Image 1 (cartoon, rainbow, N blue to C red):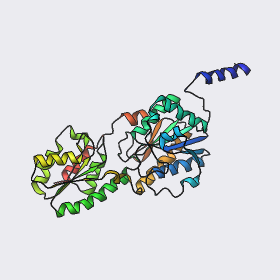
Image 2: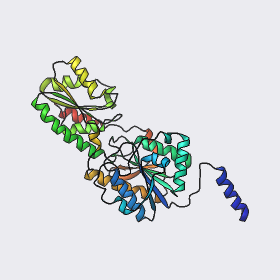
Image 3: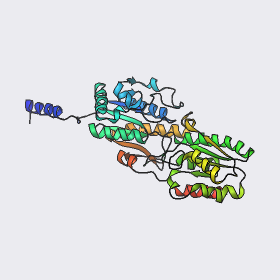
Image 4: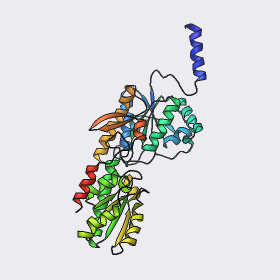
Amino acid sequence: MRGAGAAFFVFLWFKTSTYFFVMSEIKCIGILTSGGDAPGMNAAIRAVTRSAIFSGFKVMGIYRGYKGLITDEIVEFSTANVSNIIQRGGTILKTARCKEFQTPEGRQLAYDTLRSHGIDALVVIGGDGSLTGARIFANEFNFPIIGLPGTIDNDLYGTDHTIGYDTALNTIMECVDKIRDTATSHERLFFVEVMGRDAGFLALNGAIAAGAEAAIIPEISTQTDQLAELIQNGFRKSKNSSIVLVAESPVTGGAMGIAKRVEEEYPAYDVRVSILGHLQRGGSPTACDRILASRMGAAAIDALLDDQRNVMIGIKNDEIVYVPFSKAIKNDKPINQELLNTLRRLSI
């Protein structure tokens, strides 16, 4: 097919295809942060922006996550926009909930906004919910998206670590160190609640790092009565004070729920609760998180140059890997049983 006939065929194809477009070359990349903020997100924004510009791409910063795609909060980024941010917590691009993006009409509006700015691909930094939205959008519009795992929960499958996890873990350790001073002075049993609605990585590794006596996590709450095991095998036998980290999950009941059980079943103990809350999200990212975010941000651009799409950048055994969204989102990341055994052995 040649000449006018070919031109008409291409025109007709574009007219009748609502969700697909031919993209011979990526020239402009959009970047956004979504979901809960995590230390290291700014380092990732910096790495994506500078690596993209280095590779000849135009970069557009999208403010307030998916909401910014609907409200058209998009600004062109230069290297100056990301100067002096690697050490800052939070995200300069902000983040927000967006119910509109959960609807087909909202996603269509977001797509139209992207096309109006000439954005050919997206880099999305966020957790499970953010990457779920990215996957749906990518499938609906055949739009190239690369995800970066930005969440303190460390719960995304296919990567050993997520951006923000190391900083949150260090924050937990520092807080528990301080709580231990008063727990010992008053001979109290402290339950410290940390984030991790569906995953116990922060509670488990925070307990090991801070020398806590136990961690109550959702992954094993259905298998054993963790509170009874703690009281009978540890605190009751040899300790006059104790610290237990509890994941905030409804499966565990949270620190308040566990403390109520102790008051009812073991009234002899002086119980206190400390909920760390959003303390865990803040603060300057650690060196580990800055390096991880920088590597992943640069790898996101490499992935697009390699014609990858709809994958999350992960790290396994210190090597960058590409993880399909379907695996990163749908598969549960397992808890290391060796770490559980280590905590039990060290809590005597």
